[in-house]
Image 1 (cartoon, rainbow, N blue to C red):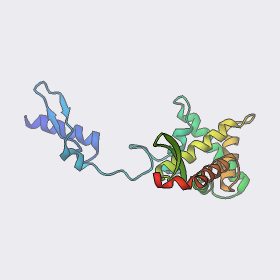
Image 2 (image 1 turned 45 degrees about the horizontal axis):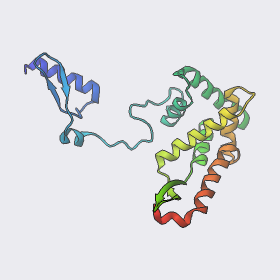
Image 3 (image 1 turned 45 degrees about the vertical axis):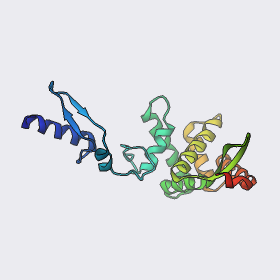
Image 4 (image 1 turned 90 degrees about the horizontal axis):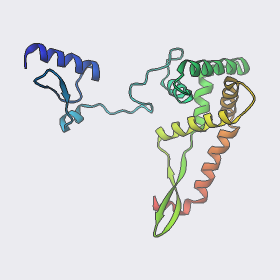
Length: 199
């Protein structure tokens, strides 16, 4: 391999993977590049501790990964600018109604909607049992966002920004459909705690 080819490979891997190449790269005779998968390559990867997808960038206004993830979940049909307008409009409505920082209201509402336990169906000896299990932090966030958006979409007759603002205020105050769904999940887990040894 010539020095120019090696330099091109290094530049491409830096662009693709950041500053350190995560996977071994091989240049073929025709000049094409093959990215290999090996134990050595896997060990170079950094573990991902964020509760967002890889490559997610913070939103422009609040510089928050959580808000960026929420906007992506709110987005319909790939129309991200519309989802951003709806979300930021709802935060402005919250700021007008509550006279406090809307980002804090959003974060607290999301925390209040996160379930701590849920039930999973498990088949043991020909019978299905609803087994209570603890929810991982990433799934807690996913379920909270999903439930909030389901509640918003089920409300009818008003603009989405107003419905979202009202749902976030309800979650902040620990009322509304999302909190009811969380409490129902906790009650179901409590009712089936006799089967927790199957987990």
